[in-house]
Amino acid sequence: MRFLLTSLMLFSITVAAAEQPWRLYKTAAETRVEYRHNADKLLQVKAQTEVSATPAAFLHLLEDTANITKWAANTEKAQLLGQPDANTHLVHTYFSAMWPVSKRDMVTQSVWQQDPLSGVLTMVVSDMGQHFPAVQGYVRMQQVQARWTLTPLPDGRMNIEYQGQADAAGKLPHFIGDKVALKSLLKTFLQLQQVLPTYQRDYPGIQL
Image 1 (tube, rainbow, N blue to C red):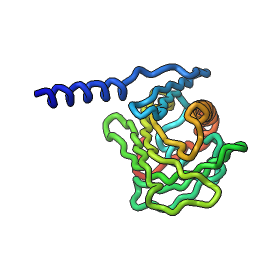
Image 2: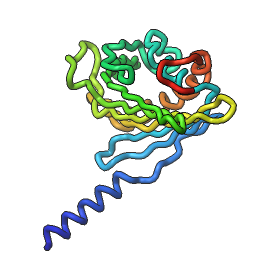
Image 3: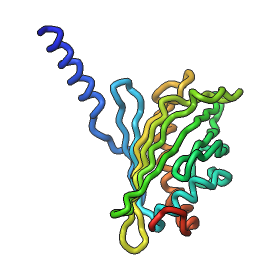
Image 4: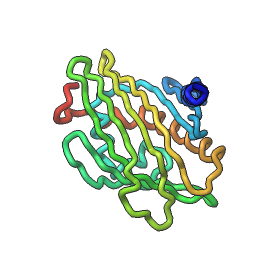
């Protein structure tokens, strides 16, 4: 009985730590960025904005890896490694950094699906870095997880919600890594508002 009670207490503590309330980082125009830390003190981020575009434009944007630096903050380049099916993309992304911080990279798999009734598109991003060799001069990021939710709105607008986490790895202090991550996320979403409308065109399999 004592073991059971102890286990339940530990479980409750873990759940409570993992479900800490979100804290506001900054708002700018229609963009809002929040953050919290999980039980392992890993930064989790959440961002939301509205744009004049549809889910089709978002998919075209992600496939245009050659121009990722125009909207994703602190990126050097991205390479599409593979597309196992129409809804799945495997991408290697390289990030810049200022000395003495080392450059980072990550390999991720993104899988999207669209609800046929609401038109809401969700994309789940998972870490694939452990399946690819390290690149000299870059620190491989770990525990990369993310989820995009794109909700069509009236008049051709769309609500974009993002929630994710990533361990910068290496010897980077958490307080520095957290600051960079939050600043980069806000800048990315502000640039996303400007760039995304230019990608508006039909996409195979997307209704809107």
